[in-house]
Picture (cartoon, rainbow, N blue to C red):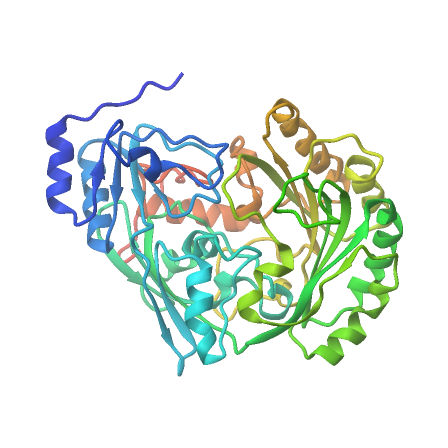
Length: 471
């Protein structure tokens, strides 16, 4: 059982005097609201919370944590909260919510608490779009540090591939601006290495000239899962890079927010995001429209601002358990395994199994090298279960069974943003190739040798690493 660490009131008061944002101790009004993540399966129990208003607040918080022997964690929305932040300083960045668009340079400068919805809304008047994922409610910074798998990923690559520079507070409390020419090893590690190296307070990322998509979802009855999968595999393999797809097996809850006739049903959902006009989109999608009878067809030309309609991710906090693996290819045997473990005949509490198509620009190296892994895979498989009353004890094993069953077809890797609960040392290394992970540990040792930033998908520092001048 965790024993909460109590800091002297005078210590908290000292930090409060240095910060513009609030400093909250356990039991104080607003503390629970500040620490509660979107993923309600995780309960944070920090010693103190700093509601940072700016980068100077973050730096003051990191220096405070170091002076009091505390680790430090960070949270914006908490969508990726799979491990608790305990007996530490939790830096909440939700107040840092500015977005600046440079339409001439096609860039966005994004503060630490910004969600993708904020960026989408700010960029749209200029005919530009960011490389966000399936839900615009996710924090842009944490998503990007984990690589970021965009809705338009096959067309443009990982979100981290488009980062121009970052501002980060490192374990020494310094505010650093890093890019390809300034502290390049840290710049490399932050783009794909997640949050092990500091607290990123802002970043500059490239935008793409997209204002409309041919996108949305086809829904088939769950009983047609086999024929849909058999049609999907060759169809997806022949698609141009302008089309990104996901095929999901969904056990939808009988809740009012799920529209009829999908409510309470097991369905197969093909999700499409095509950077093309409607005529070309119709031509490309025709084989899958004919693959099996449809319950619903909601694929059409859409403004990019409606991008959430493609995946229809949950908008309200809930407790979830998720894991993922990467496939070398989607083979008939792999399809059969998915159907056996999560198909119409499976008795499972797993709510969703999504086969996310990779390849295209996701398989190509970026212009400026980074630490993003998974470029050798052709599909990511993500299994998610809701830890709802009555089934919660069954969900983790069921999710693990899906991922474990696909091991014979896996690259052995995963994507860090879909990693789930951190495992042992070997398991923590899975999102990256071995040489990348070794280098990440060396950068960690150079910038955070005492492992201040140790929560979530943290990378341990390598032993016996000398810190070079300029790092």
